[in-house]
Length: 199
View (cartoon, helix red, strand yellow):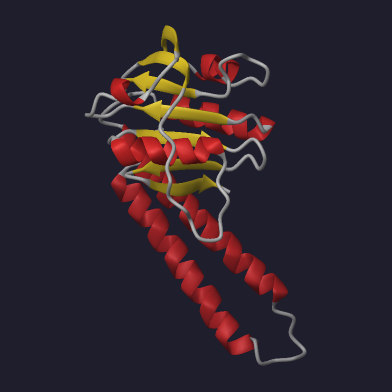
């Protein structure tokens, strides 16, 4: 799916307008004690989450599209892993060669496919815990050991996959997609920062 700038801007404008309308409604109704506003907050939260999701999807596609034609395949693999609560860590190389920063991977040398990615990260597979490297249209290797960040994020305890995703993107311009096996949350790391795609 090619989520273009014009579509993204139109969608985001619609969500921002809906969020503003919901906030205006709340600002007038919260003082009315006979009016329960819990559902109003739930609606607001849903709108904010949906706006956040389209924004993170747009930027992830924007960061990846010049370097691989398989954004839709990567998204599908991440969604399937998330639905099954299978953890995953996929590193997509951009301009900087990442070979000096990864170690002990198993060569794969296959075309990118969501089925192969899901198989790599199937629990019990010997290479499911490491990072999988994608270079252009190829799954280069899997089970890679990546550099781990020392960064502390206030209020968050990060697992090894997330710390490795951040660490890799602190040292290179790669993008790392992470799926949490505990929550199914999909995130991506870029320039040492972690962004949630799907809560």
